Image 1 (cartoon, rainbow, N blue to C red):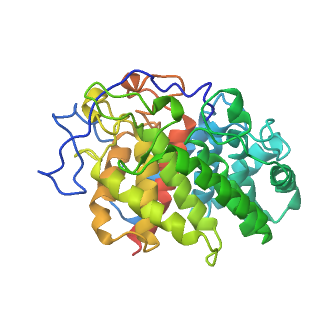
Image 2 (image 1 turned 60 degrees about the horizontal axis):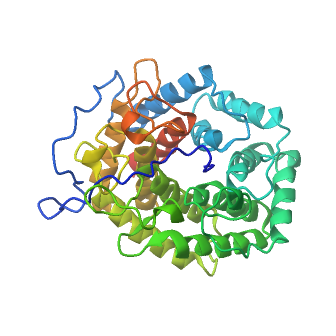
Image 3 (image 1 turned 90 degrees about the vertical axis):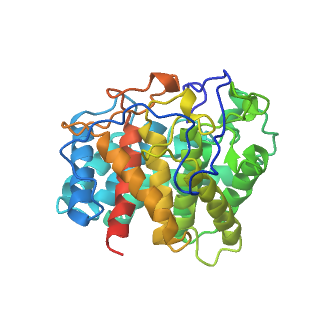
Length: 384
């Protein structure tokens, strides 16, 4: 997401909690969390009808309450990708396919206007996906043209953070959800491996710079290297790491099975997934501050949605063991509890908001998208 609108705090907050008294997947907290959101009329049962009903309820609310963000902006990218996953599983398939198509047609299937800004590539994921259904080359030609320009660029700058550099390099961790899956989809669609070769090079450039191997988490950007939470721990945000883990799952989903660098992506996915599962709260949520959940105790559903999606995808693909299922089920239950009777998903940290300000009325379209992506993998899990 664009660093100009991200709204991460630069103030240090608090700590990693002791996990010795809990199982690795039981989560962490040094004090009791605030009361979790009250259950809605939806069921959190991991069975097909219940999951599909929850996905449909949330998707229909979002379609009836359009976001104010522009059609090409990164905020909507997870929603359109998640809506595609609902479409291929729903009895109302054409309704959702039409909605994805209308969004693309409204901007003539263009990426965002900034050539190398990762945020402006994110929406093209839905273009490649809808192309699989409708086989209209107009849907992907602008994205392929943009990626063709990227193939000619050097991407040779250092990754110390600055606003202007976000237009040219992946200097913030959220970028790993925005551009890499789109490049992987370009290769999956065309067979041209130059796109994933570029993605591979840029992914590891950013990862080598922002990934903390000791904590197995990503810094948001270089400004956070020397910052500390109030308890002295390093600063790692839930949603930023949610973007990364979900981006990893989506890259692996579309990466050629025989790609030479695939094992390296799998290893990072497994290593990070284990750490993320350890940090889940007992009520199923991941708080905004991963290493100090008590400092920002209000539930947050966008990070929770991305983590639940990625962990469930990993289990479904056999990359993670069944021991992750309790964390996945807790995460899904937490997400369903945050859905209001109207279908609005609450407790989403908005762009520009401080994590502690997140509340039941706050929502964003990317939170809805994370919910739908998680639901799509819960449907697969239910069928196992």
